[in-house]
Amino acid sequence: MSQVTVTPSSPILAQSGGEGGGAAFDQIIGISVATAIITVGLLWIAYLHRTRKITWLQTTADTAARALDRPPWVALPLVTFVGTILTAFFGFIWDVSLHIGRGRDDGPLANPAHYFILVGLFLLFITGMLAMILPRDEKPGPAAIKITRTWYVPVGGVLVAGAGLYALIGFPLDDVWHRIFGQDVTLWGPTHLMLIGGAGLSLIGVLLLDYEGRMATPGDTKQDSRLIWFLRCGTFGGLLIGLSVFQIEYDFGVEQFRLVLQPMMIAGAAAFTLVAARIVLGPFAAIVAVAVAGIVRAITALMVGPVLGAPTNVFELCLGAAVLIELLALTPLIKNRVAFGAVGGLLVATVGLWLESLWIDAVYIYPWPTSMWPEALAMAVPVGIAAGACGALLGRVLRSEGLPRPAISRTIVVATVVVIAGATANGLVATVPENATATIALTEAAPDGGRMVDAEVRIDPPDLAGDDPAWVSILSWQGGPGLGNGFTVDRLERTGPGTYRTHEPVPVHGTWKTLLRVQDGRTMTAVPIYLPSDPGIGAEELPAVASSTRDFVPEITILQRERNFDHPSWLFGAASLVVLVCTLALITALAWGAGRISKYTQGQAATGTREDVTVT
Image 1 (cartoon, rainbow, N blue to C red):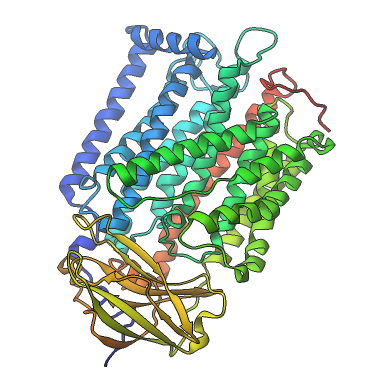
Image 2 (image 1 turned 45 degrees about the vertical axis):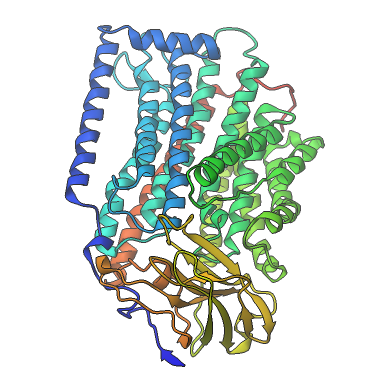
Protein backbone atom coordinates (compact mmCIF):
# COMPACT_ATOMS: atom_id res chain seq x y z
CA MET A 1 0.00 0.00 0.00
CA SER A 2 1.22 3.51 -0.79
CA GLN A 3 0.44 6.62 1.18
CA VAL A 4 0.10 9.76 -0.99
CA THR A 5 -0.96 13.12 0.36
CA VAL A 6 -2.36 15.55 -2.21
CA THR A 7 -3.02 19.16 -1.33
CA PRO A 8 -4.32 22.07 -3.45
CA SER A 9 -0.79 23.32 -3.97
CA SER A 10 0.62 19.91 -4.88
CA PRO A 11 2.62 19.85 -8.14
CA ILE A 12 0.85 16.59 -8.92
CA LEU A 13 -2.34 18.56 -9.44
CA ALA A 14 -1.24 21.81 -11.03
CA GLN A 15 1.61 24.12 -11.72
CA SER A 16 1.83 27.30 -13.70
CA GLY A 17 2.25 26.73 -17.41
CA GLY A 18 1.61 28.43 -20.70
CA GLU A 19 -1.17 26.21 -22.01
CA GLY A 20 -3.29 26.79 -18.96
CA GLY A 21 -3.30 30.55 -19.46
CA GLY A 22 -4.64 32.83 -22.18
CA ALA A 23 -4.93 32.26 -25.90
CA ALA A 24 -2.11 32.61 -28.40
CA PHE A 25 -1.69 36.16 -29.65
CA ASP A 26 -2.30 35.18 -33.29
CA GLN A 27 -5.79 33.98 -32.34
CA ILE A 28 -6.45 37.15 -30.33
CA ILE A 29 -5.32 39.26 -33.28
CA GLY A 30 -7.50 37.23 -35.64
CA ILE A 31 -10.61 37.73 -33.54
CA SER A 32 -9.83 41.43 -33.09
CA VAL A 33 -9.44 41.93 -36.85
CA ALA A 34 -12.68 40.06 -37.53
CA THR A 35 -14.48 42.19 -34.92
CA ALA A 36 -13.16 45.40 -36.48
CA ILE A 37 -14.19 44.33 -39.99
CA ILE A 38 -17.70 43.36 -38.87
CA THR A 39 -18.11 46.61 -36.92
CA VAL A 40 -16.95 48.80 -39.80
CA GLY A 41 -19.07 46.84 -42.26
CA LEU A 42 -22.15 47.20 -40.07
CA LEU A 43 -21.62 50.94 -39.68
CA TRP A 44 -21.12 51.30 -43.44
CA ILE A 45 -24.34 49.43 -44.21
CA ALA A 46 -26.17 51.56 -41.65
CA TYR A 47 -24.90 54.72 -43.30
CA LEU A 48 -25.85 53.54 -46.81
CA HIS A 49 -29.31 52.47 -45.65
CA ARG A 50 -30.15 55.63 -43.76
CA THR A 51 -28.90 57.83 -46.63
CA ARG A 52 -30.95 55.72 -49.08
CA LYS A 53 -27.95 54.68 -51.12
CA ILE A 54 -28.96 51.01 -50.88
CA THR A 55 -32.41 49.44 -51.09
CA TRP A 56 -31.77 45.73 -50.56
CA LEU A 57 -31.86 45.96 -46.76
CA GLN A 58 -35.27 47.66 -46.75
CA THR A 59 -36.59 45.25 -49.38
CA THR A 60 -35.52 42.27 -47.28
CA ALA A 61 -37.07 43.78 -44.17
CA ASP A 62 -40.33 44.49 -46.02
CA THR A 63 -40.53 40.85 -47.12
CA ALA A 64 -40.11 39.69 -43.53
CA ALA A 65 -42.72 42.24 -42.41
CA ARG A 66 -45.37 40.81 -44.73
CA ALA A 67 -44.70 37.29 -43.49
CA LEU A 68 -44.76 38.12 -39.77
CA ASP A 69 -47.28 40.98 -39.73
CA ARG A 70 -44.80 43.21 -37.95
CA PRO A 71 -43.05 46.44 -38.98
CA PRO A 72 -39.83 45.87 -40.97
CA TRP A 73 -37.65 47.05 -38.07
CA VAL A 74 -39.07 44.19 -35.97
CA ALA A 75 -39.67 41.47 -38.57
CA LEU A 76 -36.14 41.21 -40.00
CA PRO A 77 -34.43 41.24 -36.58
CA LEU A 78 -36.82 38.51 -35.41
CA VAL A 79 -35.87 36.36 -38.40
CA THR A 80 -32.14 36.84 -37.85
CA PHE A 81 -32.53 36.27 -34.13
CA VAL A 82 -33.95 32.77 -34.61
CA GLY A 83 -30.86 31.73 -36.55
CA THR A 84 -28.67 33.62 -34.10
CA ILE A 85 -29.87 31.97 -30.93
CA LEU A 86 -30.04 28.46 -32.41
CA THR A 87 -26.48 28.78 -33.74
CA ALA A 88 -25.11 30.07 -30.45
CA PHE A 89 -26.99 27.46 -28.40
CA PHE A 90 -25.77 24.59 -30.55
CA GLY A 91 -22.20 25.86 -30.30
CA PHE A 92 -22.55 26.29 -26.55
CA ILE A 93 -23.80 22.74 -25.90
CA TRP A 94 -21.16 21.30 -28.23
CA ASP A 95 -18.45 23.35 -26.51
CA VAL A 96 -19.42 22.15 -23.03
CA SER A 97 -19.54 18.59 -24.32
CA LEU A 98 -16.09 18.86 -25.91
CA HIS A 99 -14.59 20.20 -22.67
CA ILE A 100 -16.10 17.28 -20.76
CA GLY A 101 -14.83 14.72 -23.25
CA ARG A 102 -11.49 16.24 -24.26
CA GLY A 103 -10.44 18.90 -21.78
CA ARG A 104 -9.19 22.42 -22.33
CA ASP A 105 -8.73 24.30 -25.61
CA ASP A 106 -5.54 25.62 -27.12
CA GLY A 107 -7.38 28.90 -27.75
CA PRO A 108 -10.68 30.42 -28.89
CA LEU A 109 -10.13 29.34 -32.51
CA ALA A 110 -8.90 25.82 -31.72
CA ASN A 111 -12.35 24.51 -30.81
CA PRO A 112 -14.88 24.07 -33.67
CA ALA A 113 -17.79 24.82 -31.34
CA HIS A 114 -16.35 28.27 -30.62
CA TYR A 115 -16.98 29.32 -34.21
CA PHE A 116 -20.71 28.70 -33.77
CA ILE A 117 -20.69 30.64 -30.51
CA LEU A 118 -18.77 33.55 -31.99
CA VAL A 119 -21.00 33.72 -35.07
CA GLY A 120 -24.10 33.50 -32.89
CA LEU A 121 -22.98 36.28 -30.56
CA PHE A 122 -21.92 38.54 -33.41
CA LEU A 123 -25.31 37.97 -35.05
CA LEU A 124 -27.01 38.72 -31.74
CA PHE A 125 -25.35 42.13 -31.65
CA ILE A 126 -26.16 42.66 -35.34
CA THR A 127 -29.80 41.72 -34.70
CA GLY A 128 -30.15 44.49 -32.14
CA MET A 129 -28.36 46.94 -34.42
CA LEU A 130 -30.69 46.07 -37.31
CA ALA A 131 -33.68 47.06 -35.19
CA MET A 132 -31.97 50.38 -34.55
CA ILE A 133 -30.80 50.96 -38.14
CA LEU A 134 -33.94 50.08 -40.10
CA PRO A 135 -36.37 52.84 -38.96
CA ARG A 136 -35.88 55.84 -41.26
CA ASP A 137 -39.04 57.90 -41.60
CA GLU A 138 -40.94 56.78 -38.54
CA LYS A 139 -40.86 56.69 -34.80
CA PRO A 140 -40.68 52.95 -34.00
CA GLY A 141 -43.26 52.77 -31.28
CA PRO A 142 -44.34 55.27 -28.62
CA ALA A 143 -41.42 54.40 -26.32
CA ALA A 144 -38.74 54.89 -28.98
CA ILE A 145 -35.48 56.57 -27.96
CA LYS A 146 -34.36 59.70 -29.80
CA ILE A 147 -30.80 59.39 -31.16
CA THR A 148 -30.66 62.42 -33.46
CA ARG A 149 -33.17 65.04 -34.55
CA THR A 150 -34.84 62.61 -36.94
CA TRP A 151 -33.59 59.19 -35.82
CA TYR A 152 -35.52 57.16 -33.27
CA VAL A 153 -34.67 53.60 -32.22
CA PRO A 154 -36.84 50.97 -30.47
CA VAL A 155 -36.05 50.19 -26.87
CA GLY A 156 -36.01 46.44 -27.57
CA GLY A 157 -33.38 46.91 -30.26
CA VAL A 158 -31.13 48.77 -27.84
CA LEU A 159 -31.56 46.02 -25.24
CA VAL A 160 -30.81 43.19 -27.68
CA ALA A 161 -27.72 44.99 -28.95
CA GLY A 162 -26.66 45.68 -25.38
CA ALA A 163 -27.08 42.01 -24.41
CA GLY A 164 -25.04 41.00 -27.45
CA LEU A 165 -22.32 43.49 -26.59
CA TYR A 166 -22.27 42.26 -22.99
CA ALA A 167 -21.78 38.68 -24.21
CA LEU A 168 -19.09 39.68 -26.72
CA ILE A 169 -17.18 41.59 -24.03
CA GLY A 170 -16.98 38.28 -22.22
CA PHE A 171 -14.56 36.91 -24.86
CA PRO A 172 -11.65 39.32 -24.30
CA LEU A 173 -12.34 39.36 -20.56
CA ASP A 174 -12.25 35.56 -20.61
CA ASP A 175 -8.76 35.62 -22.10
CA VAL A 176 -7.58 38.15 -19.50
CA TRP A 177 -9.13 35.97 -16.80
CA HIS A 178 -7.27 32.89 -18.04
CA ARG A 179 -3.97 34.75 -18.14
CA ILE A 180 -4.36 35.74 -14.49
CA PHE A 181 -6.10 32.73 -12.96
CA GLY A 182 -5.47 29.93 -15.46
CA GLN A 183 -8.21 28.09 -17.32
CA ASP A 184 -11.24 27.40 -15.16
CA VAL A 185 -12.71 24.37 -16.93
CA THR A 186 -16.23 24.98 -15.66
CA LEU A 187 -19.35 26.61 -17.02
CA TRP A 188 -19.53 28.77 -13.91
CA GLY A 189 -16.40 30.77 -14.54
CA PRO A 190 -17.39 34.44 -14.14
CA THR A 191 -16.57 35.41 -17.73
CA HIS A 192 -18.25 32.25 -19.01
CA LEU A 193 -21.42 33.39 -17.27
CA MET A 194 -21.20 36.66 -19.18
CA LEU A 195 -21.10 34.80 -22.49
CA ILE A 196 -24.13 32.66 -21.79
CA GLY A 197 -25.98 35.22 -19.67
CA GLY A 198 -25.97 37.85 -22.41
CA ALA A 199 -27.43 35.43 -24.93
CA GLY A 200 -30.02 34.09 -22.49
CA LEU A 201 -31.24 37.46 -21.23
CA SER A 202 -31.42 38.84 -24.77
CA LEU A 203 -34.74 36.98 -25.10
CA ILE A 204 -36.33 39.57 -22.79
CA GLY A 205 -35.18 42.29 -25.19
CA VAL A 206 -36.64 40.34 -28.12
CA LEU A 207 -40.01 40.02 -26.38
CA LEU A 208 -40.04 43.76 -25.72
CA LEU A 209 -39.03 44.49 -29.34
CA ASP A 210 -41.84 42.32 -30.66
CA TYR A 211 -44.27 44.11 -28.36
CA GLU A 212 -43.12 47.51 -29.63
CA GLY A 213 -43.75 46.26 -33.16
CA ARG A 214 -47.28 45.21 -32.31
CA MET A 215 -47.92 48.61 -30.78
CA ALA A 216 -46.83 50.22 -34.05
CA THR A 217 -48.86 47.86 -36.26
CA PRO A 218 -51.82 49.62 -37.98
CA GLY A 219 -55.26 48.28 -37.19
CA ASP A 220 -57.79 48.19 -34.39
CA THR A 221 -57.43 44.68 -32.99
CA LYS A 222 -53.74 43.76 -33.25
CA GLN A 223 -54.87 40.14 -32.80
CA ASP A 224 -52.21 37.61 -33.75
CA SER A 225 -52.88 34.70 -36.06
CA ARG A 226 -52.50 31.21 -34.65
CA LEU A 227 -49.12 30.87 -36.36
CA ILE A 228 -47.80 34.11 -34.88
CA TRP A 229 -49.22 33.13 -31.48
CA PHE A 230 -47.31 29.85 -31.70
CA LEU A 231 -44.11 31.64 -32.70
CA ARG A 232 -44.47 33.97 -29.73
CA CYS A 233 -44.91 30.94 -27.47
CA GLY A 234 -41.70 29.68 -29.03
CA THR A 235 -39.98 32.88 -27.95
CA PHE A 236 -40.94 32.14 -24.36
CA GLY A 237 -39.63 28.62 -24.93
CA GLY A 238 -36.36 30.21 -25.98
CA LEU A 239 -36.38 32.31 -22.83
CA LEU A 240 -36.86 29.15 -20.77
CA ILE A 241 -33.80 27.65 -22.48
CA GLY A 242 -31.87 30.88 -22.03
CA LEU A 243 -32.51 30.92 -18.29
CA SER A 244 -31.78 27.19 -18.00
CA VAL A 245 -28.29 27.18 -19.50
CA PHE A 246 -26.78 27.95 -16.11
CA GLN A 247 -27.41 24.35 -14.98
CA ILE A 248 -25.97 22.65 -18.08
CA GLU A 249 -23.18 21.03 -16.03
CA TYR A 250 -25.92 19.29 -14.06
CA ASP A 251 -27.49 18.13 -17.33
CA PHE A 252 -24.23 16.43 -18.31
CA GLY A 253 -23.61 14.98 -14.84
CA VAL A 254 -20.36 16.86 -14.16
CA GLU A 255 -21.69 19.48 -11.79
CA GLN A 256 -18.83 21.14 -9.95
CA PHE A 257 -21.08 22.71 -7.34
CA ARG A 258 -23.52 21.30 -4.81
CA LEU A 259 -26.57 19.47 -6.10
CA VAL A 260 -28.91 21.67 -4.05
CA LEU A 261 -28.40 24.50 -6.57
CA GLN A 262 -30.09 22.59 -9.38
CA PRO A 263 -33.73 22.66 -8.14
CA MET A 264 -33.36 26.33 -7.21
CA MET A 265 -32.26 27.24 -10.75
CA ILE A 266 -35.03 25.16 -12.33
CA ALA A 267 -37.68 26.78 -10.12
CA GLY A 268 -36.48 30.31 -10.90
CA ALA A 269 -36.30 29.82 -14.67
CA ALA A 270 -39.64 28.04 -14.89
CA ALA A 271 -41.54 30.42 -12.60
CA PHE A 272 -40.35 33.58 -14.39
CA THR A 273 -40.89 32.28 -17.91
CA LEU A 274 -44.11 30.31 -17.56
CA VAL A 275 -45.94 32.93 -15.49
CA ALA A 276 -45.10 35.60 -18.08
CA ALA A 277 -46.06 33.32 -21.00
CA ARG A 278 -49.46 32.46 -19.50
CA ILE A 279 -50.29 36.08 -18.71
CA VAL A 280 -49.26 37.36 -22.13
CA LEU A 281 -50.51 34.64 -24.46
CA GLY A 282 -53.37 33.02 -22.59
CA PRO A 283 -54.44 29.37 -22.28
CA PHE A 284 -51.92 26.62 -23.11
CA ALA A 285 -49.10 29.11 -23.72
CA ALA A 286 -47.02 27.74 -20.83
CA ILE A 287 -47.36 24.18 -22.10
CA VAL A 288 -46.50 25.14 -25.68
CA ALA A 289 -43.44 27.09 -24.47
CA VAL A 290 -42.21 24.04 -22.56
CA ALA A 291 -42.84 21.82 -25.59
CA VAL A 292 -40.84 24.10 -27.91
CA ALA A 293 -37.98 24.26 -25.43
CA GLY A 294 -37.98 20.48 -25.09
CA ILE A 295 -37.90 19.92 -28.86
CA VAL A 296 -34.97 22.32 -29.33
CA ARG A 297 -33.06 20.78 -26.43
CA ALA A 298 -33.70 17.23 -27.69
CA ILE A 299 -32.56 17.98 -31.25
CA THR A 300 -29.43 19.74 -29.99
CA ALA A 301 -28.56 16.88 -27.63
CA LEU A 302 -29.05 14.38 -30.47
CA MET A 303 -26.76 16.33 -32.80
CA VAL A 304 -24.01 16.81 -30.23
CA GLY A 305 -24.15 13.31 -28.73
CA PRO A 306 -24.99 10.48 -31.14
CA VAL A 307 -24.25 12.45 -34.32
CA LEU A 308 -20.95 14.15 -33.36
CA GLY A 309 -19.88 11.50 -30.87
CA ALA A 310 -19.51 13.82 -27.88
CA PRO A 311 -20.99 13.30 -24.38
CA THR A 312 -24.78 13.57 -24.42
CA ASN A 313 -26.80 15.72 -22.05
CA VAL A 314 -30.30 15.38 -20.70
CA PHE A 315 -32.45 18.34 -19.66
CA GLU A 316 -35.25 19.35 -17.32
CA LEU A 317 -38.83 19.14 -18.65
CA CYS A 318 -40.72 21.75 -16.56
CA LEU A 319 -43.92 20.12 -17.82
CA GLY A 320 -45.35 19.75 -14.33
CA ALA A 321 -44.60 23.42 -13.66
CA ALA A 322 -46.39 24.42 -16.87
CA VAL A 323 -49.49 22.39 -15.99
CA LEU A 324 -49.58 23.94 -12.52
CA ILE A 325 -49.44 27.47 -13.98
CA GLU A 326 -52.21 26.64 -16.45
CA LEU A 327 -54.42 25.24 -13.68
CA LEU A 328 -53.77 28.23 -11.42
CA ALA A 329 -54.77 30.53 -14.28
CA LEU A 330 -58.26 29.01 -14.20
CA THR A 331 -58.82 30.60 -10.79
CA PRO A 332 -59.75 34.24 -10.09
CA LEU A 333 -56.18 34.82 -8.97
CA ILE A 334 -55.21 35.42 -12.61
CA LYS A 335 -56.85 38.83 -12.29
CA ASN A 336 -54.23 39.95 -9.79
CA ARG A 337 -51.08 39.49 -11.81
CA VAL A 338 -48.42 39.87 -9.12
CA ALA A 339 -50.27 37.61 -6.69
CA PHE A 340 -50.77 35.09 -9.51
CA GLY A 341 -47.04 35.18 -10.24
CA ALA A 342 -46.05 34.79 -6.59
CA VAL A 343 -48.43 31.89 -5.93
CA GLY A 344 -47.48 30.33 -9.27
CA GLY A 345 -43.82 30.56 -8.28
CA LEU A 346 -44.62 28.93 -4.95
CA LEU A 347 -46.36 26.03 -6.71
CA VAL A 348 -43.50 25.64 -9.17
CA ALA A 349 -40.94 25.59 -6.34
CA THR A 350 -42.83 22.93 -4.36
CA VAL A 351 -45.24 20.67 -6.25
CA GLY A 352 -43.56 21.50 -9.54
CA LEU A 353 -40.13 20.47 -8.23
CA TRP A 354 -41.57 17.25 -6.83
CA LEU A 355 -43.01 16.43 -10.25
CA GLU A 356 -39.72 17.40 -11.88
CA SER A 357 -37.85 15.11 -9.47
CA LEU A 358 -39.63 12.12 -11.01
CA TRP A 359 -38.04 12.98 -14.35
CA ILE A 360 -34.70 13.81 -12.74
CA ASP A 361 -34.63 10.46 -10.96
CA ALA A 362 -35.44 8.64 -14.22
CA VAL A 363 -32.94 10.19 -16.65
CA TYR A 364 -30.26 12.16 -14.79
CA ILE A 365 -27.01 10.66 -13.55
CA TYR A 366 -27.59 12.09 -10.08
CA PRO A 367 -31.17 11.91 -8.72
CA TRP A 368 -32.27 14.20 -5.92
CA PRO A 369 -31.77 12.50 -2.53
CA THR A 370 -34.42 12.88 0.14
CA SER A 371 -31.87 14.43 2.51
CA MET A 372 -31.43 17.37 0.13
CA TRP A 373 -35.05 18.54 0.14
CA PRO A 374 -35.15 20.74 3.28
CA GLU A 375 -32.28 22.93 2.10
CA ALA A 376 -33.47 22.74 -1.52
CA LEU A 377 -36.91 24.05 -0.60
CA ALA A 378 -35.44 26.74 1.64
CA MET A 379 -33.55 28.02 -1.42
CA ALA A 380 -36.07 27.31 -4.19
CA VAL A 381 -39.25 28.63 -2.57
CA PRO A 382 -38.09 32.26 -2.10
CA VAL A 383 -36.51 32.22 -5.57
CA GLY A 384 -39.65 30.76 -7.15
CA ILE A 385 -41.95 33.31 -5.48
CA ALA A 386 -39.72 36.26 -6.41
CA ALA A 387 -39.12 35.04 -9.97
CA GLY A 388 -42.85 34.40 -10.46
CA ALA A 389 -43.70 37.93 -9.29
CA CYS A 390 -41.02 39.30 -11.62
CA GLY A 391 -42.45 37.27 -14.51
CA ALA A 392 -45.85 38.77 -13.73
CA LEU A 393 -44.38 42.27 -14.10
CA LEU A 394 -43.05 41.35 -17.54
CA GLY A 395 -46.45 39.92 -18.40
CA ARG A 396 -48.19 43.16 -17.41
CA VAL A 397 -45.84 45.16 -19.62
CA LEU A 398 -46.43 42.90 -22.63
CA ARG A 399 -50.20 43.11 -22.18
CA SER A 400 -50.27 46.92 -21.97
CA GLU A 401 -51.50 46.76 -18.40
CA GLY A 402 -48.70 48.88 -17.02
CA LEU A 403 -46.56 48.27 -14.00
CA PRO A 404 -47.57 48.77 -10.35
CA ARG A 405 -46.29 51.82 -8.55
CA PRO A 406 -42.52 52.29 -9.05
CA ALA A 407 -41.85 51.51 -5.40
CA ILE A 408 -43.58 48.13 -5.77
CA SER A 409 -42.03 47.23 -9.14
CA ARG A 410 -38.52 48.19 -8.10
CA THR A 411 -38.85 46.35 -4.81
CA ILE A 412 -39.89 43.16 -6.61
CA VAL A 413 -37.00 43.35 -9.09
CA VAL A 414 -34.39 44.20 -6.45
CA ALA A 415 -35.75 41.54 -4.09
CA THR A 416 -35.56 38.96 -6.89
CA VAL A 417 -31.90 39.77 -7.56
CA VAL A 418 -31.07 39.70 -3.84
CA VAL A 419 -32.93 36.45 -3.20
CA ILE A 420 -31.28 34.70 -6.15
CA ALA A 421 -27.87 36.00 -5.08
CA GLY A 422 -28.43 34.85 -1.51
CA ALA A 423 -29.61 31.39 -2.51
CA THR A 424 -26.70 31.02 -4.92
CA ALA A 425 -24.21 32.12 -2.28
CA ASN A 426 -25.59 29.54 0.11
CA GLY A 427 -25.39 26.84 -2.55
CA LEU A 428 -21.77 27.67 -3.25
CA VAL A 429 -20.75 27.03 0.37
CA ALA A 430 -18.89 23.72 0.44
CA THR A 431 -16.60 22.21 3.04
CA VAL A 432 -13.76 19.70 2.89
CA PRO A 433 -13.43 17.50 5.99
CA GLU A 434 -10.12 17.50 7.78
CA ASN A 435 -8.16 14.29 8.29
CA ALA A 436 -10.45 12.37 5.93
CA THR A 437 -8.97 9.75 3.63
CA ALA A 438 -10.01 7.17 1.07
CA THR A 439 -8.26 3.82 0.71
CA ILE A 440 -8.70 2.63 -2.86
CA ALA A 441 -7.86 -0.91 -3.97
CA LEU A 442 -7.70 -1.44 -7.73
CA THR A 443 -8.16 -4.75 -9.54
CA GLU A 444 -7.09 -5.14 -13.16
CA ALA A 445 -9.92 -5.56 -15.67
CA ALA A 446 -9.97 -6.32 -19.38
CA PRO A 447 -8.21 -3.53 -21.32
CA ASP A 448 -10.35 -1.20 -23.40
CA GLY A 449 -8.03 1.05 -25.35
CA GLY A 450 -5.75 1.01 -22.31
CA ARG A 451 -5.68 0.07 -18.67
CA MET A 452 -9.07 -0.49 -16.99
CA VAL A 453 -9.62 -1.28 -13.31
CA ASP A 454 -12.33 -2.17 -10.84
CA ALA A 455 -12.18 -0.31 -7.54
CA GLU A 456 -13.06 -0.97 -3.92
CA VAL A 457 -13.19 2.13 -1.73
CA ARG A 458 -13.01 2.52 2.06
CA ILE A 459 -13.70 6.01 3.37
CA ASP A 460 -12.39 7.15 6.74
CA PRO A 461 -14.32 8.32 8.70
CA PRO A 462 -17.04 5.89 7.55
CA ASP A 463 -19.86 8.41 8.10
CA LEU A 464 -18.30 11.03 5.81
CA ALA A 465 -20.92 10.46 3.10
CA GLY A 466 -23.89 9.96 5.41
CA ASP A 467 -26.84 7.63 4.78
CA ASP A 468 -28.35 9.50 1.82
CA PRO A 469 -25.59 11.45 0.03
CA ALA A 470 -25.99 13.45 -3.15
CA TRP A 471 -23.34 11.24 -4.68
CA VAL A 472 -20.47 8.89 -4.01
CA SER A 473 -19.12 8.22 -7.46
CA ILE A 474 -16.08 7.84 -9.65
CA LEU A 475 -15.86 10.33 -12.47
CA SER A 476 -13.63 9.66 -15.47
CA TRP A 477 -13.54 12.44 -18.03
CA GLN A 478 -11.49 14.23 -20.68
CA GLY A 479 -10.34 10.89 -22.13
CA GLY A 480 -10.95 11.82 -25.80
CA PRO A 481 -10.53 12.13 -28.67
CA GLY A 482 -10.49 8.64 -30.11
CA LEU A 483 -11.69 7.00 -26.87
CA GLY A 484 -15.44 7.07 -27.23
CA ASN A 485 -16.95 10.22 -25.83
CA GLY A 486 -14.24 10.57 -23.18
CA PHE A 487 -16.63 10.61 -20.23
CA THR A 488 -18.06 8.08 -17.76
CA VAL A 489 -19.62 8.24 -14.30
CA ASP A 490 -20.01 5.25 -11.97
CA ARG A 491 -22.27 5.79 -8.95
CA LEU A 492 -20.67 3.43 -6.47
CA GLU A 493 -22.48 0.59 -4.76
CA ARG A 494 -22.39 0.78 -0.97
CA THR A 495 -21.21 -2.52 0.53
CA GLY A 496 -21.00 -1.51 4.20
CA PRO A 497 -20.30 1.44 6.52
CA GLY A 498 -17.97 3.66 4.53
CA THR A 499 -17.18 0.98 1.91
CA TYR A 500 -18.11 1.06 -1.75
CA ARG A 501 -17.28 -0.64 -5.04
CA THR A 502 -17.62 0.10 -8.74
CA HIS A 503 -20.26 -1.44 -10.98
CA GLU A 504 -17.98 -1.57 -14.01
CA PRO A 505 -14.30 -0.91 -14.81
CA VAL A 506 -13.02 2.67 -14.97
CA PRO A 507 -10.18 3.96 -17.20
CA VAL A 508 -6.79 4.87 -15.72
CA HIS A 509 -4.72 5.51 -18.82
CA GLY A 510 -4.01 8.06 -21.52
CA THR A 511 -5.52 11.48 -20.95
CA TRP A 512 -8.30 10.25 -18.69
CA LYS A 513 -8.69 12.01 -15.34
CA THR A 514 -10.30 9.66 -12.83
CA LEU A 515 -11.33 10.67 -9.32
CA LEU A 516 -13.51 9.65 -6.40
CA ARG A 517 -16.19 12.26 -5.62
CA VAL A 518 -18.29 12.68 -2.47
CA GLN A 519 -21.05 15.22 -1.91
CA ASP A 520 -23.36 15.17 1.08
CA GLY A 521 -24.96 18.27 2.56
CA ARG A 522 -22.27 20.95 2.61
CA THR A 523 -19.50 18.40 2.22
CA MET A 524 -18.06 18.39 -1.29
CA THR A 525 -14.69 16.76 -1.75
CA ALA A 526 -12.71 14.35 -3.89
CA VAL A 527 -9.70 12.05 -4.08
CA PRO A 528 -7.67 11.66 -7.28
CA ILE A 529 -7.26 8.08 -8.53
CA TYR A 530 -5.38 8.72 -11.76
CA LEU A 531 -4.20 11.96 -13.35
CA PRO A 532 -2.01 12.01 -16.47
CA SER A 533 1.11 14.09 -16.83
CA ASP A 534 0.39 17.44 -18.43
CA PRO A 535 3.56 19.25 -19.57
CA GLY A 536 1.47 22.19 -20.82
CA ILE A 537 0.72 23.19 -17.24
CA GLY A 538 3.73 21.56 -15.61
CA ALA A 539 1.71 18.82 -13.90
CA GLU A 540 3.19 15.42 -13.13
CA GLU A 541 1.40 12.11 -13.49
CA LEU A 542 -0.44 10.74 -10.48
CA PRO A 543 -0.36 6.99 -11.13
CA ALA A 544 -3.16 4.58 -10.35
CA VAL A 545 -1.46 2.14 -7.99
CA ALA A 546 -2.87 -1.18 -6.80
CA SER A 547 -3.63 0.17 -3.34
CA SER A 548 -3.39 3.68 -1.99
CA THR A 549 -4.61 5.88 0.83
CA ARG A 550 -5.06 9.48 -0.19
CA ASP A 551 -6.44 12.59 1.49
CA PHE A 552 -9.73 14.19 0.49
CA VAL A 553 -9.12 17.59 -1.11
CA PRO A 554 -11.33 20.32 -2.64
CA GLU A 555 -12.78 19.05 -5.89
CA ILE A 556 -11.85 22.22 -7.70
CA THR A 557 -8.14 21.39 -7.39
CA ILE A 558 -8.70 18.23 -9.43
CA LEU A 559 -11.55 19.12 -11.78
CA GLN A 560 -10.00 22.48 -12.60
CA ARG A 561 -6.43 21.28 -12.74
CA GLU A 562 -5.38 24.17 -15.00
CA ARG A 563 -6.42 26.77 -12.44
CA ASN A 564 -3.71 28.97 -10.97
CA PHE A 565 -4.25 29.44 -7.23
CA ASP A 566 -1.04 31.41 -6.75
CA HIS A 567 -2.54 34.91 -6.63
CA PRO A 568 -3.77 37.34 -3.95
CA SER A 569 -7.32 36.63 -2.83
CA TRP A 570 -8.26 40.27 -3.32
CA LEU A 571 -7.38 40.04 -7.02
CA PHE A 572 -9.90 37.27 -7.64
CA GLY A 573 -12.50 39.25 -5.69
CA ALA A 574 -11.81 42.43 -7.65
CA ALA A 575 -12.02 40.60 -10.99
CA SER A 576 -15.27 38.94 -9.96
CA LEU A 577 -16.62 42.35 -8.93
CA VAL A 578 -15.99 43.71 -12.45
CA VAL A 579 -18.05 40.87 -13.91
CA LEU A 580 -20.77 41.43 -11.29
CA VAL A 581 -21.01 45.14 -12.13
CA CYS A 582 -21.38 44.34 -15.84
CA THR A 583 -24.10 41.80 -15.04
CA LEU A 584 -26.04 44.18 -12.80
CA ALA A 585 -25.77 46.83 -15.52
CA LEU A 586 -27.45 44.49 -18.02
CA ILE A 587 -30.22 43.56 -15.57
CA THR A 588 -30.76 47.25 -14.78
CA ALA A 589 -30.96 48.06 -18.48
CA LEU A 590 -33.59 45.36 -19.07
CA ALA A 591 -35.65 46.59 -16.12
CA TRP A 592 -35.34 50.19 -17.33
CA GLY A 593 -36.38 49.20 -20.84
CA ALA A 594 -39.45 47.36 -19.63
CA GLY A 595 -40.38 50.32 -17.43
CA ARG A 596 -39.99 52.81 -20.27
CA ILE A 597 -42.13 50.74 -22.62
CA SER A 598 -44.78 50.27 -19.95
CA LYS A 599 -44.89 54.02 -19.32
CA TYR A 600 -45.64 54.84 -22.96
CA THR A 601 -47.95 51.93 -23.83
CA GLN A 602 -50.06 51.37 -20.73
CA GLY A 603 -53.72 50.99 -21.58
CA GLN A 604 -53.30 50.46 -25.33
CA ALA A 605 -55.27 47.52 -26.73
CA ALA A 606 -52.70 45.02 -27.89
CA THR A 607 -53.12 41.73 -26.08
CA GLY A 608 -52.60 39.31 -28.94
CA THR A 609 -54.06 36.56 -26.70
CA ARG A 610 -57.17 34.40 -26.73
CA GLU A 611 -58.59 35.89 -23.57
CA ASP A 612 -59.36 39.21 -21.91
CA VAL A 613 -59.46 39.64 -18.15
CA THR A 614 -59.87 42.48 -15.75
CA VAL A 615 -56.70 43.25 -13.89
CA THR A 616 -56.62 44.57 -10.35
